[in-house]
Length: 372
Image 1 (cartoon, rainbow, N blue to C red):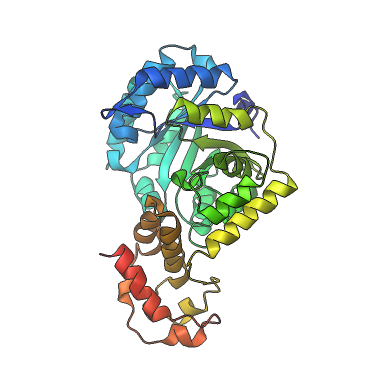
Image 2 (cartoon, rainbow, N blue to C red):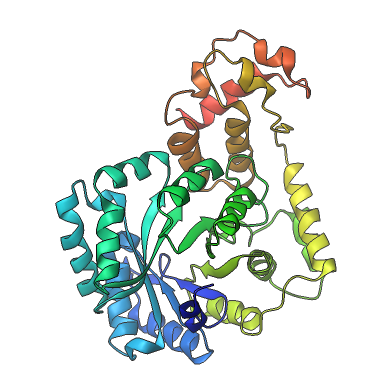
């Protein structure tokens, strides 16, 4: 690992996408209290992006952090987001506006934001990586990375084409770890293969792993009193190759809870790990389609529908009902066609399915959920 990364204190990062709001505006008083508490307990990593909170997150960073503390007392990450540029010439002015909004002269980390197959193609066309490498050479950013929302083969492609990338931010939590749609474990393995430390987003799946079904809650209640978030974040931080886990803390109570178990971080013990696996099995039983992702069906589908991935999206939607499921359906698994509604009812998939699933009917359910 790059020796510079040793300047990052501890494994918990302050994700600034869900700052406390009052009447639609960032609550600076509460945010300053959170910043002060975070730094006072030995943490120093802050993560923002130009579009977070409609542009208010970067300004809150300036008002609550950078104008109040020495530059060497914190690590600041910002991102180049696809919605804010269409041409190469727009990247540098955008970058300068981000520095100004945050009140700094450089970013410690600058990430190519939300990379997937299509967005990566746009960034290549606009020479975004090359521009970022120029900014790196100029000292305007200290380290180049990416945040990533796609499957492992796309991450392999990006890291192969741009070995200068130093860190990778991926989605990972105990439910998504072996999910065939998100492929968190496989993405982490790609990071390790290329020697890139991983920064983790969505460790509690947008808050879904805090408010658990009763059966799952009972499993954690039988442990030693940790919060639901503690098991989720510590599971993620326990994985080999993970440098940092981001938590989008929205109030001081969330922060104090996170600090309580991350200040002196301990990986999950055997009993806790078994409980997490039991919770995962409970989620799998909550009316989920029992698809094993063998992918025999995709080999015979004349419409090239990625059936197991679409089923994984529907399973996640039923259980968690958060935005990621629709994102993966529309932007990853059906971006080049192959929507559930494209099914021609030929039945070839059902003839070959070892689980004997009624795939044609299930694809209708998928289409009703994601295409209405």
